[in-house]
Length: 248
Image (cartoon, rainbow, N blue to C red; front, top):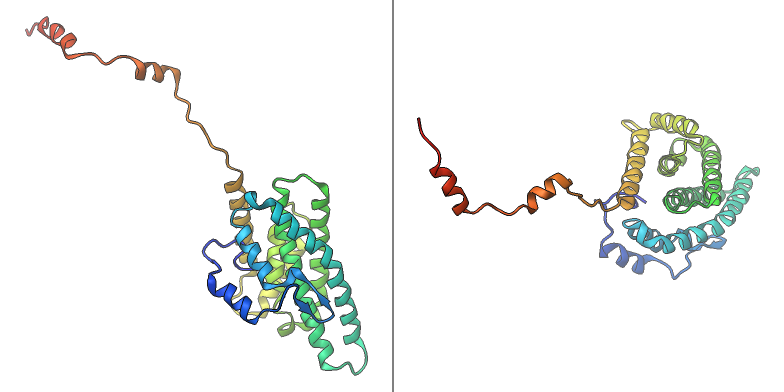
């Protein structure tokens, strides 16, 4: 996810070789479900598409729709896993499975927030706005759910929370997310999660400005244009005038 909005972080051939070597055939198997959105290759493709989003709107929308389709399934599995951990004498594996689903859901929320924000630059579909607000609501709910697992079991929370806050440029529940980011800074010495979130938002704004910039034609002032088009005075025209000069 670090490569989404950072032009200095590029995925080289090593990344795709690693995906091919250690990855599983699409779609990736994830405990009780198969989710294309969570595959490393999908996130790598997103990183490339986000370099020039205007030219890749159709591909971004397709991936966004896949995420919207898979998120309810992951959310349901997370709810079941959470119930399993609450049972008396719950095995350690239940906690591990629940944690993995929390991480997976956090990744989906982060990617959905950023892609949704990008699509809204050119698409006025109000459904995207509603999805964005739902994403923020789910993000805050997940943060609250992970509260009991702090600090070690929730060290992934700032990763998705920074991206969701950054993408929520309409201000929806920004203050609540900011409070959580500042609070999570207490878990790590020298952490500046709020600063990271602001940096990501600045990159989003920079991307929007770059992708929506129009070519500006330099129109020459008519007065200046007439001067440019005026014929150049020849040397012969200058010499007679010079001979008429009288030096006193």
